[in-house]
Image 1 (cartoon, helix red, strand yellow):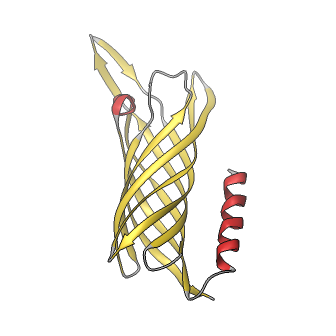
Image 2 (image 1 turned 90 degrees about the vertical axis):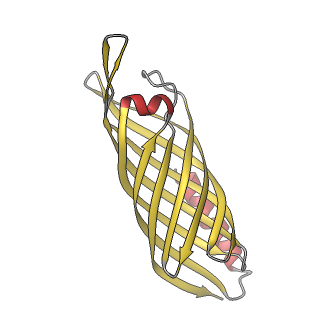
Image 3 (image 1 turned 90 degrees about the horizontal axis):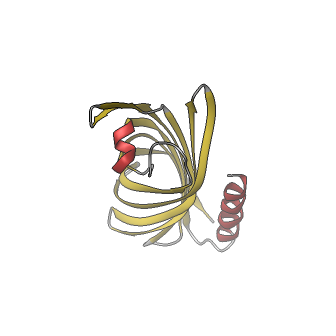
Length: 180
């Protein structure tokens, strides 16, 4: 995570040195996440927050740094007369990405690191790996409504074979500044 944050600072610093009337914005957002696939069998809807730093390169392209914290509660699943109980999971995701925008609409993708923390058999454990997050959204004034799919490439020995989810967030840009 430190490497991604350092890389983000370097990239944003480098790009701001060439900026001509560019915009930098900082947004915060509540987030709701819907587990998919096997992850849905063992975990309920997740809730959390998102922090995003967006640098407008020009009228059509942005660079974005994103950090999300999401908590998923355990679900109980009945299969073949056997009851399976999931584990509470906490996700921390950071990514750096780009997006194309036209009017208020935007679409893009981010690449970063995702870590899941959970307690199993009385011990706190974690799994982490690469995350790919395609996203689509609409910005109106200081508000930005977007949906993304988090595809997590993590190695896990738990009873789930994938831990992917679809997330929705409504960001409010608390800071927007022209960068010269």
